[in-house]
Image (tube, rainbow, N blue to C red; front, side):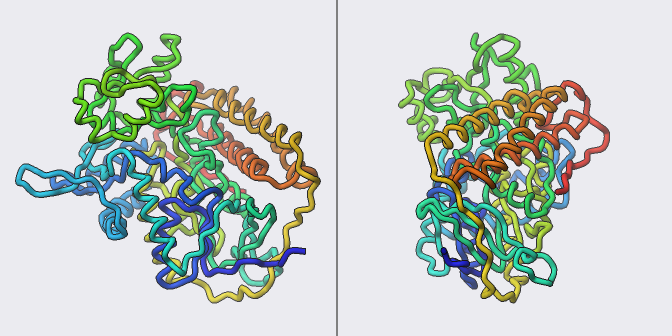
Length: 535
């Protein structure tokens, strides 16, 4: 019999990306914090982010311009108050990150003074992207991990997969329902553990793994969204799945992203014959919002019957490319491409989950004591289409905002009451069970790619939902009655649930807006209303 509760902390943060670690460092000045990572601490979307952080630093730019660009990219569905809140608090939150030791690229201006080098990306009317060459996320993540590693108030737990939230009614508490802990599968120890906490924060990232092709790391399986839903939290706008326009088309690097900053610095999108096509679709050309660029690429590929389009920056000097995109250039060379001399084959790929768990401006969910920050959440910032480089900004601002609220509200609750065990009596793990899980996972991701992708129809989505519901029944049976607990089974359980929520959201939207484009309802309704699902 394992102990009923093995870990107790004031705040338990699930996820170790920019959102989770920023929050942990802010809270650790005052409280004991435990941070769980499903894999290694660095293995998350933040680490692989190439672009940067959108924030107003240039004197010709303004917060109002950043707000207007975000609202326009969001196709009428952004919450203006949230957009204002995030953009107005961007500067001091980014300055906090700089104070932690993150060194963004600089340049010498015409007056001989050093200032930050700002690049431009799709949807932005000004240069406002702070970056560190093309490895911004890696630099941020490495800095935050380094800071957390030397903080005695932060306990770091790797290879620990959060399974389900534990609420007060689970342990028979008479007071108002709230979160009191989490069941966790410790992959290293191969056992289920319980974590007690006064506050639990979901910083688990998005759910792009529901699609067969994605730029995301393998761990982006919608865990936090599924856990929050099972605990009774609402979700919103999950039909808006952002596909990045420029993922490398290569069998040996199917999730390698070619940053939007390439287009910000002048790269062109071209057909196989070398002609540009984006000016045919939007006056902003290659710097149109991502939903427009992705649909243009998809249209041209289908019209021409080809497997890919091309990204061309060969008109820039080799010195320029090596200075701004050293990592991408080096990676492409290992695959036989030369960014300085030839166009690079690209295709769209699932990239970002614009919807998620509904939160307020402090990251509070519907369940007392439970917060959600970063890509797992729905704040209202992104609307129907996320503008490039607003995501890391959202992580930083909400880490700050949530920390302020948690420090004020951290409840005086008794954590000595033991939490109940989760029954994990399972049959012996075998290769056969893993084969079945992998088969269902591959089928699910293919169904989502084929039927709930860039261009949708009601018939395809209804077909997807029927198959997802069939898989849901099977996987619930595997989880509760038959199969052993494993990383793959836990991810599949969450992916099926999130896929169902995505399809239900998409079917309910009877219009085309932003990232959701359906042939059955190609026009946009006059009123923009978020899609909200209730458990």
